[in-house]
Amino acid sequence: MGVASRREILKAFGCAAAAAAAAPVVRGARAFAAISPPGPGGETRVLGSTGIRVATVGVGAMITRESDVIRYAVENGANYVDTADCYMGGENERIVGRALAGIRDKVVLASKVHIAPVDEMIRSVENSLRSLKTDVIDIMQLHGISSEEEVTNEDAREALRKLLEQGKIRVPGVTTHKGQETVLRAVRKHGFYRTVLVAYNFRSDEGIGAAIRSAFGSGKGLSATIREVGASGVGIIAMKTQAGGYSSPGDHLSPHQAALAWVLENPGVATTIPSMVSFAQVDENMKASGKRLGWGGRKALARYARAIGDRHCGLCGECAGSCPQGVDVPSVLRSLTYLEGYRQADLARQSYRELGPDRFARSCLSCGSCAVACRLGLDVKRLARRAHGLLA
Ligand code: SF4
Ligand code: SF4
Image (cartoon, rainbow, N blue to C red; front, top):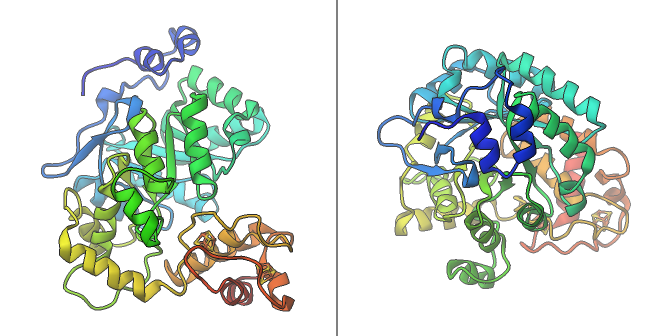
């Protein structure tokens, strides 16, 4: 990676005004060039117009409790680490901060902030900087957005612009679990945000029509949108790549590696952030770097899909807003996946309770016939009732 100053990077992003204003700022002015390439053997791609070269397998630290596991992943070729201010009530950023002590410059560090009034957002990012023990966060992303209005939200842009000028963040981005295609297109259309962290896995395009259209680069599925928006220069990072992380059926091929390879077949994806909670999981995920799916991998995925087919929500968001009682079905089912797939009870309860009584699934307990049609044929009422029983 060539040497580039922060000013040059801001200019390259079209932030000329910010670049001019930032000229005298030295605090946190490490160049992207300081980010080391991943270890030997790892596949790398460029993160859209940021120009940052990232290993295709990064670290989703959301449920990682041991900082040594994150260090081990970095030693083994990962150079992208994703966390958020609210994971584990703030503890996750402190774990990542401990993990990166002495190796901060080897990693592209990503965190998140919720849309809020400008001062509140700035305070939140400053808090993240303290927790992460760093003077700059490389990618600062808006949490879980789902609409074009959020992409153009002026408070969020003003807060992130100020943080860019102050050298506290390097690249503004967004994250999305719902309305993902809308968000991807809005980011391409309106500029400013340079990256999108998107929930994407082999169940995202399920249904034979969508799968065929995606394979040939056409159609309207998430795969096609990712390919298109990625090609336009937006840096795309994939999360939820393992379709829930459920225990896999016995097989000589790892379905988790195959799931990663499936995501990385899409050239629009620059990197992935599978969860890693153990050294064994790091080994398994890192070995997927550079692997092609092949026939064996496709068969392993098909078996995995059958095993989780009656319970895993693909997070396509297509059913959002279709419950007449206001139940936020994709979010309810995502919480259930945290519990039954990732086996993270605290995270599942926290994310479920955050939905509040207007959006969680109490109404499902007394609902006669479910009006929500799932693209994957899930029995939404049964799953939503189970989520409420286990998580309320
Ligand atoms: S069971 Fe009824 S309340 Fe629950 S999601 Fe379906 S329509 Fe909505
Ligand atoms: S429940 Fe079905 S339609 Fe709704 S988001 Fe999940 S996979 Fe998509």
